[in-house]
Image 1 (cartoon, rainbow, N blue to C red):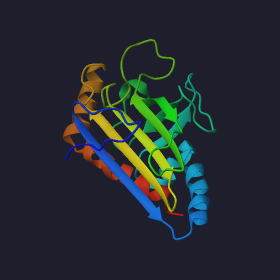
Image 2: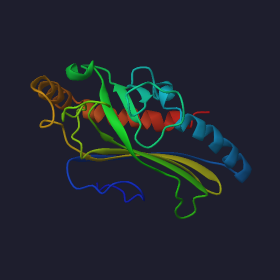
Image 3: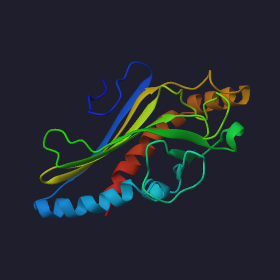
Image 4: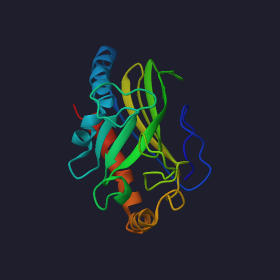
Length: 203
């Protein structure tokens, strides 16, 4: 199945991809608007994402450009520090890192409100090296979108260009990323994103 064409989501040109979407429909537009406020609170509270997708999922922490933990709404240039279940990244104290490379609130079609956060695998904030601290290559992207229409609210999570990181990592990282790929974790992440999308809407 080809990836969906979604405004703001990077083009897909290699590797794996996924499209995960969940929505809720309401009879009352006012209720849809009210519920979207709850959804926004959850969406921008990165440090609590694990609570919405289950304790057996990855743990997310929002960090600033220096790598310090912050408890606020995310900004461009911030990072997600990710602690995945299973073998951690030995070169970065067990963590994987992604950088926020895009944020916007542009609406399309019948959308009345929309918020987007797009991330790419990165080196740890403040690192002087070139190694990417993630099991995916830096071309990969994960894009998170919440939107509200006249009578619905929706969550979309989209992965593009998902190729295992075998080049910009150390020898131990190559072994670990191979293990994760062969071990089926890449498929498990799709179930995690589905759990997060549905958890966001589980009021």
